[in-house]
Image (cartoon, rainbow, N blue to C red; front, top):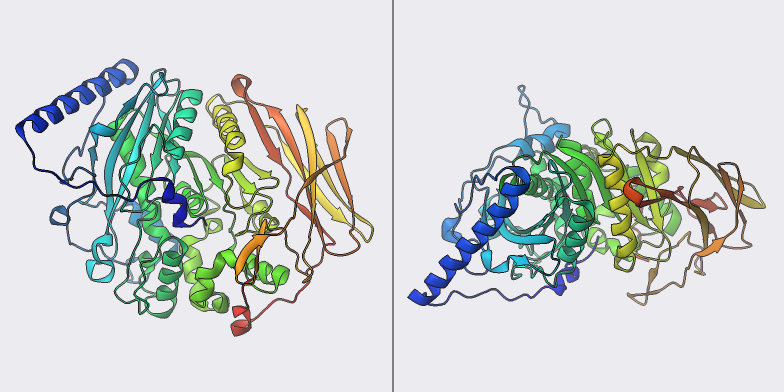
Length: 553
């Protein structure tokens, strides 16, 4: 779960309001009229018009941040009850996302409209208020969630009823993003041009920083520190308030982004693809589970499904917790794996709880050296998922997968185009096996791949951990582990591919097979098997109760 430092690529300055002169007002009106005419010309040609249902119901200063005077202080209810008065935790998320909220609105920031960087697209920047969450007495001004939303519209739209939403981070002191330089918007421009589809970039998921009035530390919390705090509060004080869990408003912010895309870009858009990294990938999973408009989901670097089973598997692998989970460790959540209330939280926030709803095509993008998640996490949930489901491991990259972005954008285009063109996806199956001398992966496919490769990495630590992270904790700071994947031989017999790795004399080996296929319209799709880790044993016993508190490694 990437830290808020990832949002440092954008300025932290808030635009100050200046005295409005007649000349400035005249210029502003001219800019607004120009942008509106430009947008209408683009959309009327391509999709027969555009509907805008909430253009300026919230007062915005120049920087786009809602003024406190314009925000409703009416708090939403904090639970979802059935007719008997009990809480149906499995319906909390859907009910909250479907619940109307008078705070929802959006406003175009015309001075940030960009046309010309990529001649075939126009990018509009909006300020969107997604919801009122929690109560102002609990979180202050952060009970109203607002976001920058950049909507990139290609001139040549191929799929007029579909759009892609890229969920990303940011803090609520950011200036509006500059489409000419923001990395995430530049990726969206590339996707919009390549796919011929509207692509939106949703920022500030979650809204942050948040200072909870009940938080004795007085911290301005960001990212995982917010999630960990809301989970602890749910366990210890508010099990009847599942909407307190941060994943709930994060999910609704994505739902509202989809609403805004349909309203602002074209009312014809009623099908969506979602992608996001880390906790934004978590939000993509959960939104796909509760919103029927999602037709494809591509979560990146988030595979903590079957949360309880996977957390126990962490401990058996590391005899502790990766340093990346420090915020959860500090809130003592690792000592609560046997807490009955965890079951209630799981019903709300664990994507595997929605496996019967997650039937759309799924492309799970993972890192072989992730500092947050272990490479064999998929062993605890993948077989339970239904429908078209692919895994794509990237070798030699950690939780921050930016260095693989070129490949990822290329593969997302292949996956989305396959779905849109009703292209036949390859049917792939594999088996993992091992004995005292070696391990194998046997992968069979009904389509002949363009290319097949296998990768292997060996553990390098001396502490006996089953550990393939790119960085590990040493003297209270992360340092490189020097765990690297290298290519290994793959044998082929027709469309059966076999990778074999010798059992190491000490430590563990992790390996997987990668296959590249032709996709629709000459694109490519790369998929992998799950990893096989040998020897197939864990170095440590499972933990129980307070013993699970452990240590950071």
